[in-house]
Image 1 (tube, rainbow, N blue to C red):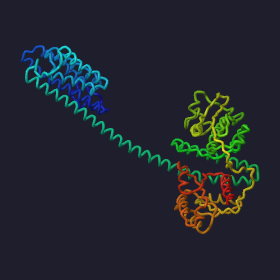
Image 2 (cartoon, rainbow, N blue to C red):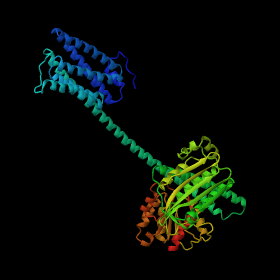
Image 3 (cartoon, rainbow, N blue to C red):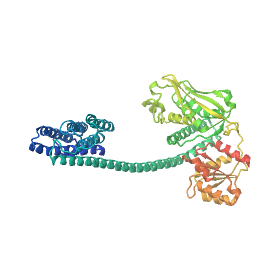
Length: 589
């Protein structure tokens, strides 16, 4: 912004350059117009008053000349004086009105009414609504007093008492010009202000459009990155699972545990980053699946015990007995994610002692069951001043936490946001150097339907013999993985490398099930599925299709069902989870 003009500045243009707001510029222009026309009017009155030997009028006009000249100079020196000068101009106008009513003319004439109108206009245009109302009341008060003292007002007196002609007529004309210019300048500023707002709205619309494009680009980028990261990770986890049945020495078992733990850690990290993005855009929703909390918690802890054992910690799971016999409807993936994050943190920040997971029933009826989850550790604890900040994204209790313990600082932020989906909240009690206890309550809908549990390790019967399966997968490593997995299940599926290859095989053969990759060259999984559903052969067109995808698209579930797929599994998937879905289809066959 340009510097303020010097005190001896006489340029309105220089002053306006220091005022960024068009409305404030307009007020300064109107005030400047009032001052200039006031100077012109007193310069007209002075010679006429002198010629007519009107000494009182001459003295008043000389004083007004000095006052108007000083106020003009003051206004041009700095915009901060505009408000003060506006008040002074209104006061001078009031004095002129009083002198006309009760001094010089002793009547209400057109000039008095002009000054009253200019006072009202100045109050609203130059100051504010409140001052406009105040000065309006002040301006009309002399009229009311004059009417009370002189009876009713029947005719407007236009006689030039106090001033000779043509001075009176010139002043009346100049007052009209002043009023017209004031309205013109304010209307000009108003139009300019509206046009500026319209231009800003246009820019805002462009910015919103660009932001939407950027958000879509980010979503596409995350989807692509998810696919590129999860696809090889699926092979790593799957091959590690296959190797678990071929161990020949304790050393191999130890190496495989390290591999599994590292792959699981990478999988968790990828999920945290992608889920945090979806939570931020409020595009993450809960599934409603029949779940046995007792079995789910044992499955979760089986993986966490390895992590705890490596640090010499005791991982304790304490569950109320009734929970085992009360299946509920919930999202097991999100429950697992919450427990993994909280318990993983507890293990990470605990060097000696134990970590305990406790589930206890708070309330139970025929429809609902309320359960409190508590995760307690004997770790480093958290300073009371840091309790709130640790739930913020990318924030940890101290700057040394990341250096000493690692992590992204997203875990607790994700837990906090996930719990809002369950209409719950996270609570923390901690003593620095002693330990911490995180807890939350969730009310679940009870479910009498059979639970869709994953086949456990102790279930050794894996047999899909006779199930006709087509695997549509463009990644050769993933195809090899699935081939090895199906061999363990006494099944040899057919393989197609892309959508067109799959259509040829479907026309030539009959299948009970198709495992369909989503992202493929030439013809992707969505289009391939639509073409299958359009086949003339009704038996082939109704084949059960399960999508295998590494995508994290926010509307993935919607797109899959729109394409005509029956179900989906996200990569990297657990082979036992895949087997559970295939076994269900095999039993219906």
